[in-house]
Length: 424
Image (cartoon, rainbow, N blue to C red; front, side, top):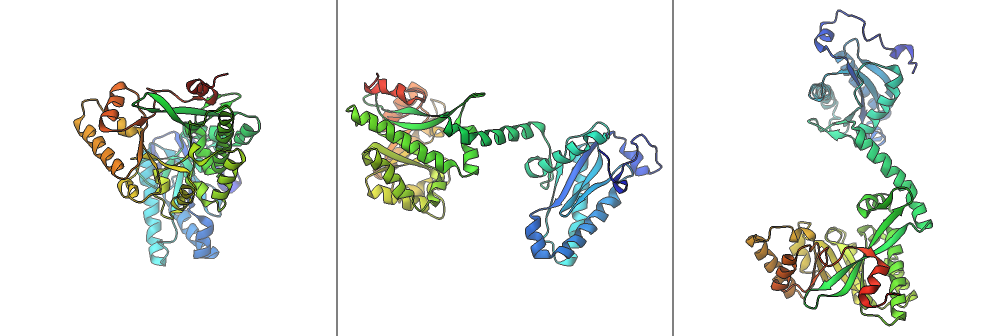
């Protein structure tokens, strides 16, 4: 690309007399994007003119450290791009750290040290300076500043191509999620829950799978975070509720009412003021009774300080719906939460069962946890059960219910009909 004259760069092979340049002895270059964090808010607090003056001071600090092959190549309102010789991350971290320390001294003198903060993103290394690659390197530096990997300096992030490609895949998936509903690409799967005494299915957890037309089966851990980020998770949760109600309606019509389904909800759903009436309206629309559904929220949702999930759970609990705490044991407030929550079911996270068969301490721990749950009159469902010895241990300590690969993997919901005698 053609740069303005004031930012044009000399030919790399040109010899100069600067001893600092001779010491560098490197041929690789990187672009560093150095900019003010939260620029709009900072400018409001500091003032436009004052912040511009501070950035001129920072620019002077950087330029005083640049050798003749290095320079600021583009300036922006919130910072600038710098082309620097690159001999390793340790050395570059040290240089950027030095710029920051000098700048902090100026901020301290001006009383702005707690207001202005900076961060840097470093693009991928170029073996030699190539003007045709400069724009790409500048874009990489911008990406790195926001999404890159940290090394030793907590204010400097580095571009890694696999991270960039992963983000591109996420963005594409995010854009395609809208058509997933429209084209019936989302499907309901059920994972059976078993009674350990009778070894019979007593319920199932509803899970979602995405059959992408190009990529095939996409698991929830890849697309659920995207839905949470753009708040479409609320749409998915109520879509799953409606699908489960349709399934239960069909089973009811065929005379099979004793198979409740568990439906997961995000803590983001709690911000909806109409959550309870909308939930009840959908269940009544399909003639589903409260005892046929169990609502699951994670432990972290219940521990949220605003308590909104707990209030919703209390309202639904009062209407006869069963409430479950999912992923119990993954947080730090588990025991205190257990004492007061309006829940009927506590689902032990799979980590509870992740130990060697001869680990006596873990066996004793599970026994104690079972005793606490029983004293509080909670039903316990152990997740992640994969081996017969785990099922035997659970039965020994008084845990009646479990789910996991030992009993069945998640399958399309119609496949579960065979287990309850409703296959076509």
